[in-house]
Image (cartoon, rainbow, N blue to C red; front, side):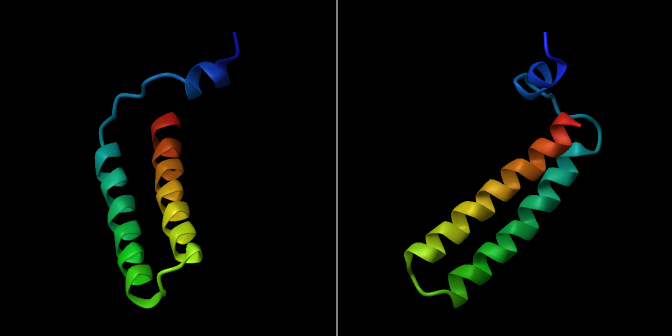
Length: 67
């Protein structure tokens, strides 16, 4: 059994203090999403930027949950 695989593919119930960290990350990302929406023309590049922002939030939250 590989501990890293086991950790990465299990449910991680939020621990004390984690929900506030998740919320802070989401709020900052939302601010950036609104800025992108405001200043960037509708384009493939804008869509990729927003998708990557969503990905960054997901991985940032995963880093909190897994570690």
